[in-house]
Image (cartoon, rainbow, N blue to C red; front, side, top):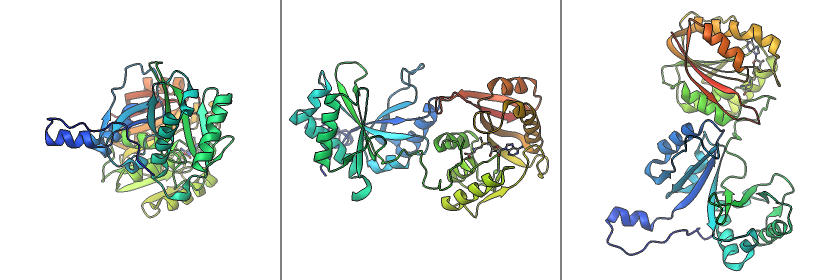
Length: 371
Ligand SMILES: C[S@@+](CC[C@H](N)C(=O)[O-])C[C@H]1O[C@@H](n2cnc3c(N)ncnc32)[C@H](O)[C@@H]1O
């Protein structure tokens, strides 16, 4: 299908590289991210896409947390490889007062072209259904838009979640409307390796950000305490090699789930899984370089009463096995308990605390360094 042409090159007296850039397709993009991790997503965009991505600065108090905007001038397929973003959208703005105008011939053709640009990135049969995400998506105009899009694309309208997600919303300055088309049929956070899902499993993009916060190095002995279905362990291995990568959990079902996922990830031969209690690890003192944990925090796994006993014991045992300067990156919703324990800790220094938004909750990621 035809490419989405947003800006065209004008003949000018610009230098050759500037002319090349001007002649390139410029895509306006928006990535959704777990709120609180925007800077980590921006780092990944810079690392993977280099100068082809022009990032918009993050405001200090982002009006819209969890959003990273950028202009992009290269192969859109590269955006499907991003690991710390939940989804990437192609954005198109229309200087129209009402969404009804999107049904007009010129704008509707532009919207179809935007959709074609997204659909053409993946094999033909990938998209079967479409759905519209918009405030007032059940209004007559939105219903008509859905039907028109369906009949022109051949995609069936999905009542709820579908393959092709199209969002329609007012532009931030309120002067027009914009359409956002997701570049993948599922969020990028849905990893192909997750063949065994466990209640309470960590969002993989958050796990990737946490693994990156351990500053991974090839010679690391990495330990994922209370590993559950293996999300942090697998995302750490996906960051690069480690001397050892260990996951441990007391739940036999969780370990079986982690094993299945580890094999599906292709890192089966690189990760170890053990039925160890995180409060009493059969590891020598000062033998671990980096640690991660998604601790039980009371809603789905464990209880507050159990955490009162588990957290101090786990922090003490982690401190015993950690090498000097080792980083321990953990996530929990038990913020007061964790802060109280860390205030008293002679072993762990708090480097950073991040408030993230996940499924309507606001857990914190604590980055700790061993004294
Ligand atoms: C929030 S879940 C971890 C989920 C995991 N991050 C995932 O993505 O699947 C917490 C895990 O802590 C484990 N756990 C609880 N107490 C433990 C202990 N004393 N030692 C090791 N694991 C423990 C539970 O079995 C559970 O799998």
